[in-house]
Length: 469
Ligand code: ADQ
Image (cartoon, rainbow, N blue to C red):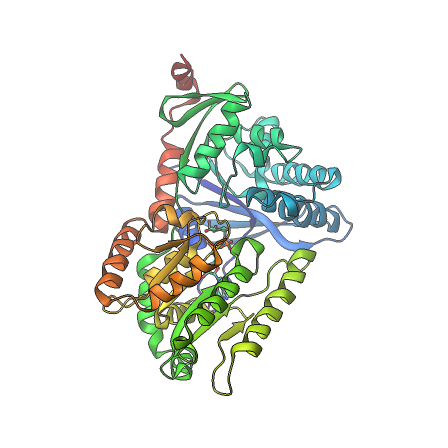
């Protein structure tokens, strides 16, 4: 079996003696790496100041070698904070108003991808299979191809891919499409993202469709597919069951004193729709005064990307908004919104999901959204809570039995909260069972295996020629 080489911006190196379990994606990729043996390469998260470094730190853990490189301050600024997080992230989340395109950042993005390729190429063996993760590294295959690398290379985009008219507003859209065409297999979260890619490729004359999900573009033939990412469903369900004995979960349950709990868990990001969600919750309380003093909304939002100004501003906006609602609606013995910016260990999170009657997952746009799937997996089968899910999360393409909402429609979300809190047990059970049945089959291992199967079983490049005729 050929080795697997995973490349991602950050690498989840297992920390000895650290109790917190890794997220599902890391677990699934580590399992695939352990099975085949291989390398997980990426940025160490550290900066080497001004000094260009050729140093690669390697950590060997059984059959997996973690290879980490530092970046210069300039690289971090231009590639990571600049192009990846201020151009690709907003554009791909349909937020052209927030995209700050600059030639310097764009150059830095391609330069760092070349740098990654230069670090990776000497470690490759001819039959290694390479799997590149996410938007930071779209041009990596092109850089490797320019260096003569002929290995099979797959790419998975964790965030949405917008339609052509949004994508084309980004000045280097052609380089991005060309970059994707250099892979052998390009995976998206949903059929919608895939359709957007095909639309841009064909409409703008970058390529043509061939049967079986294949495309011909830039004199290459490559394949695409939708591979919805998932969670470790059974592991998460087991955490949730056990977590009822966890001290922090017990404390949270006791503090509710009979109130119903509504929960929201997100990284702090404008794509997650946190401010709109707080508005909807406020609207729900105002429209349903009988719930005053009877329901608590817990929003857990660890800070992220604080170096990017929009994110720093958002931290203030969300905290102020929660404070305002509590000030206006709260009473001496009732706090309508509990707002936490600390990260919570996964087993505790699972327990908090389980004691929550409603999971409020309302991103304005999201590649998948794993919180939605975790909330479902954590429920008590005998008394499951209700998932309210944005139709603009990739997860809505699978979790049809959630209460699907439009997060721009504040009143609609407010009404959904009221409906969820009064939903009869039979309906809750029926909706939950359908979603749980789906997640038990389509877990993160299934996601990983489906992509790897397709990548490793693609016909040889020479056979592709037959498809083109
Ligand atoms: P993210 O935007 O980070 O991921 P998401 O899919 O929701 O979004 O994953 C967040 C993860 O972080 C979840 O596993 C959640 O449990 C965890 N988390 C969030 N808040 C936490 C807290 N306070 N404490 C502990 N853990 C917390 C990107 C894309 C998504 C896509 C994933 C995977 O934006 O659309 O689903 O990648 O492909």
